[in-house]
Image (cartoon, rainbow, N blue to C red; front, side, top):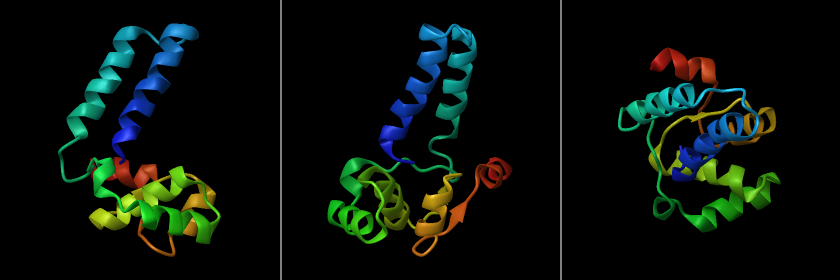
Length: 111
């Protein structure tokens, strides 16, 4: 996962807690703790910005007509030689030409 992903997850937990009142704060904290406990295991690697070749990101984005953000996930997976976990159909199809793709159900089975 990209380092930015951690902030995205935090934001997806913040919204139902703070704006929608559909998730209790304690439940959100439990989910963050669960994510934090996965980081550092062999299953999930956090790829930092400086580990990604930005020229490669741009190449992938241009050649596959993907946004820079999605291409960043592809380049990160390439850089660390790891499968990309995604349910995004378009990303799965395009990234599958370059890297191994797994679904979230596959990832859950590895944890």
